[in-house]
Image (cartoon, one colour):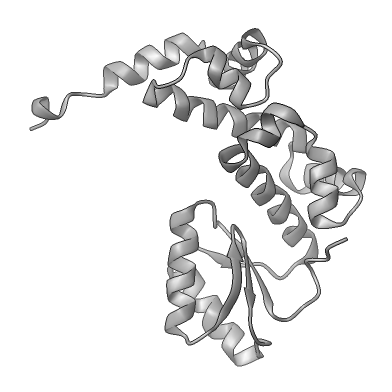
Length: 197
Protein backbone atom coordinates (compact mmCIF):
# COMPACT_ATOMS: atom_id res chain seq x y z
CA UNK A 1 0.00 0.00 0.00
CA UNK A 2 1.07 3.57 -0.66
CA UNK A 3 2.10 5.91 2.11
CA UNK A 4 1.77 9.57 1.19
CA UNK A 5 2.91 11.10 4.42
CA UNK A 6 6.59 10.44 5.07
CA UNK A 7 8.98 11.67 2.40
CA UNK A 8 10.52 15.17 2.48
CA UNK A 9 10.23 15.31 -1.29
CA UNK A 10 6.43 15.43 -1.12
CA UNK A 11 4.52 18.70 -0.79
CA UNK A 12 0.86 18.70 0.20
CA UNK A 13 -1.01 21.79 -0.90
CA UNK A 14 -4.43 23.06 0.13
CA UNK A 15 -6.78 24.77 -2.37
CA UNK A 16 -5.38 22.96 -5.42
CA UNK A 17 -8.72 21.96 -6.91
CA UNK A 18 -8.42 22.13 -10.70
CA UNK A 19 -6.05 21.74 -13.65
CA UNK A 20 -5.38 25.49 -13.68
CA UNK A 21 -4.18 25.21 -10.07
CA UNK A 22 -1.82 22.41 -11.08
CA UNK A 23 -0.43 24.56 -13.91
CA UNK A 24 0.12 27.59 -11.62
CA UNK A 25 1.92 25.53 -8.94
CA UNK A 26 4.03 23.77 -11.57
CA UNK A 27 5.08 27.04 -13.21
CA UNK A 28 5.90 28.69 -9.87
CA UNK A 29 7.97 25.72 -8.67
CA UNK A 30 9.85 25.63 -11.96
CA UNK A 31 10.69 29.34 -11.49
CA UNK A 32 12.33 28.27 -8.21
CA UNK A 33 14.33 25.63 -10.15
CA UNK A 34 12.55 22.77 -8.40
CA UNK A 35 12.41 19.64 -10.56
CA UNK A 36 8.98 18.02 -10.36
CA UNK A 37 8.74 14.25 -10.57
CA UNK A 38 4.94 14.12 -10.34
CA UNK A 39 2.14 16.65 -9.74
CA UNK A 40 -1.56 16.12 -9.09
CA UNK A 41 -4.35 17.82 -7.18
CA UNK A 42 -3.02 18.75 -3.76
CA UNK A 43 0.30 16.96 -4.10
CA UNK A 44 3.72 17.51 -5.64
CA UNK A 45 6.55 15.01 -5.64
CA UNK A 46 9.96 16.53 -6.32
CA UNK A 47 13.09 14.86 -7.68
CA UNK A 48 15.18 15.87 -4.68
CA UNK A 49 14.72 16.40 -0.95
CA UNK A 50 13.54 19.91 -0.02
CA UNK A 51 15.51 21.70 2.71
CA UNK A 52 13.96 24.04 5.30
CA UNK A 53 15.05 27.26 3.58
CA UNK A 54 13.56 26.18 0.26
CA UNK A 55 10.41 25.04 2.03
CA UNK A 56 9.92 28.55 3.45
CA UNK A 57 10.32 30.08 -0.01
CA UNK A 58 7.78 27.58 -1.38
CA UNK A 59 5.38 28.37 1.47
CA UNK A 60 5.51 32.11 0.66
CA UNK A 61 5.06 31.48 -3.07
CA UNK A 62 2.04 29.26 -2.45
CA UNK A 63 0.40 31.80 -0.13
CA UNK A 64 0.91 34.57 -2.72
CA UNK A 65 -1.01 32.39 -5.20
CA UNK A 66 -3.89 31.49 -2.86
CA UNK A 67 -2.60 28.07 -1.83
CA UNK A 68 -1.39 26.74 1.50
CA UNK A 69 1.32 24.26 2.40
CA UNK A 70 -0.08 21.50 4.61
CA UNK A 71 2.14 20.04 7.29
CA UNK A 72 -0.31 18.49 9.74
CA UNK A 73 -0.58 14.76 8.97
CA UNK A 74 -4.32 14.59 9.65
CA UNK A 75 -5.04 17.57 7.40
CA UNK A 76 -2.90 15.94 4.68
CA UNK A 77 -5.07 12.83 4.87
CA UNK A 78 -8.28 14.89 4.58
CA UNK A 79 -6.93 16.85 1.59
CA UNK A 80 -5.88 13.61 -0.11
CA UNK A 81 -9.37 12.15 0.44
CA UNK A 82 -10.95 15.28 -1.06
CA UNK A 83 -8.61 15.33 -4.04
CA UNK A 84 -9.19 11.66 -4.87
CA UNK A 85 -12.96 12.23 -4.73
CA UNK A 86 -12.75 15.33 -6.97
CA UNK A 87 -10.39 13.64 -9.45
CA UNK A 88 -12.72 10.63 -9.64
CA UNK A 89 -15.95 12.59 -10.06
CA UNK A 90 -14.47 14.96 -12.62
CA UNK A 91 -12.22 12.55 -14.48
CA UNK A 92 -13.15 8.90 -14.04
CA UNK A 93 -16.70 8.35 -15.29
CA UNK A 94 -15.96 4.65 -15.83
CA UNK A 95 -15.33 4.19 -12.09
CA UNK A 96 -18.54 6.06 -11.23
CA UNK A 97 -20.72 4.12 -13.65
CA UNK A 98 -19.26 0.69 -12.80
CA UNK A 99 -17.80 0.53 -9.28
CA UNK A 100 -19.00 3.44 -7.12
CA UNK A 101 -17.08 1.98 -4.16
CA UNK A 102 -15.25 5.02 -2.84
CA UNK A 103 -14.29 3.33 0.44
CA UNK A 104 -12.17 0.68 -1.32
CA UNK A 105 -10.72 3.28 -3.71
CA UNK A 106 -9.67 5.54 -0.81
CA UNK A 107 -8.17 2.63 1.14
CA UNK A 108 -6.19 1.54 -1.94
CA UNK A 109 -4.96 5.02 -2.87
CA UNK A 110 -4.14 6.30 0.62
CA UNK A 111 -3.22 3.08 2.37
CA UNK A 112 -5.30 3.68 5.49
CA UNK A 113 -8.38 2.01 6.95
CA UNK A 114 -11.58 3.61 5.62
CA UNK A 115 -13.21 3.78 9.07
CA UNK A 116 -10.24 5.77 10.38
CA UNK A 117 -10.36 8.16 7.41
CA UNK A 118 -14.13 8.51 7.75
CA UNK A 119 -13.96 9.35 11.46
CA UNK A 120 -11.09 11.78 10.89
CA UNK A 121 -12.90 13.44 7.97
CA UNK A 122 -16.12 13.92 9.96
CA UNK A 123 -14.27 15.34 12.96
CA UNK A 124 -12.33 17.92 10.92
CA UNK A 125 -14.87 18.77 8.18
CA UNK A 126 -18.17 18.49 10.11
CA UNK A 127 -19.64 16.38 7.29
CA UNK A 128 -19.12 12.75 6.35
CA UNK A 129 -17.12 11.50 3.37
CA UNK A 130 -20.41 10.29 1.88
CA UNK A 131 -21.95 13.78 2.18
CA UNK A 132 -18.83 15.29 0.58
CA UNK A 133 -19.13 12.82 -2.34
CA UNK A 134 -22.80 13.77 -2.83
CA UNK A 135 -21.98 17.49 -2.78
CA UNK A 136 -19.26 16.99 -5.41
CA UNK A 137 -21.55 14.86 -7.58
CA UNK A 138 -24.25 17.54 -7.45
CA UNK A 139 -21.70 20.21 -8.40
CA UNK A 140 -20.72 18.06 -11.38
CA UNK A 141 -24.40 17.55 -12.27
CA UNK A 142 -24.90 21.34 -12.16
CA UNK A 143 -22.01 21.73 -14.58
CA UNK A 144 -23.53 19.15 -16.97
CA UNK A 145 -26.92 20.87 -16.74
CA UNK A 146 -25.42 24.29 -17.51
CA UNK A 147 -23.87 23.00 -20.72
CA UNK A 148 -27.14 21.30 -21.69
CA UNK A 149 -25.47 18.58 -23.75
CA UNK A 150 -26.67 15.58 -21.73
CA UNK A 151 -30.09 14.33 -20.66
CA UNK A 152 -30.80 13.86 -16.97
CA UNK A 153 -30.68 10.12 -17.56
CA UNK A 154 -27.19 10.40 -19.09
CA UNK A 155 -26.03 12.60 -16.21
CA UNK A 156 -27.36 10.10 -13.65
CA UNK A 157 -25.49 7.28 -15.41
CA UNK A 158 -22.22 9.24 -15.69
CA UNK A 159 -22.32 10.09 -11.97
CA UNK A 160 -23.13 6.53 -10.87
CA UNK A 161 -26.71 7.05 -9.71
CA UNK A 162 -29.00 4.02 -9.70
CA UNK A 163 -31.80 6.09 -11.24
CA UNK A 164 -32.77 9.55 -12.44
CA UNK A 165 -35.08 9.76 -9.42
CA UNK A 166 -32.17 9.18 -7.01
CA UNK A 167 -30.16 11.98 -8.67
CA UNK A 168 -33.22 14.27 -8.71
CA UNK A 169 -33.90 13.71 -5.01
CA UNK A 170 -30.31 14.47 -4.01
CA UNK A 171 -30.15 17.46 -6.37
CA UNK A 172 -33.28 19.00 -4.81
CA UNK A 173 -32.04 18.30 -1.29
CA UNK A 174 -28.66 19.98 -1.90
CA UNK A 175 -29.68 22.91 -4.15
CA UNK A 176 -33.32 23.54 -3.25
CA UNK A 177 -34.20 23.28 -6.96
CA UNK A 178 -35.25 20.39 -9.14
CA UNK A 179 -32.76 19.60 -11.90
CA UNK A 180 -35.14 20.97 -14.56
CA UNK A 181 -35.70 24.22 -12.58
CA UNK A 182 -31.94 24.63 -12.25
CA UNK A 183 -31.46 23.99 -15.98
CA UNK A 184 -34.11 26.61 -16.87
CA UNK A 185 -32.59 29.20 -14.52
CA UNK A 186 -29.07 28.76 -15.91
CA UNK A 187 -30.25 28.77 -19.53
CA UNK A 188 -32.17 32.00 -18.95
CA UNK A 189 -29.03 33.55 -17.41
CA UNK A 190 -26.95 32.78 -20.50
CA UNK A 191 -27.31 35.46 -23.13
CA UNK A 192 -26.39 35.11 -26.80
CA UNK A 193 -23.06 36.66 -27.64
CA UNK A 194 -24.64 39.18 -30.01
CA UNK A 195 -26.79 40.48 -27.14
CA UNK A 196 -23.80 41.24 -24.92
CA UNK A 197 -22.85 44.90 -24.72
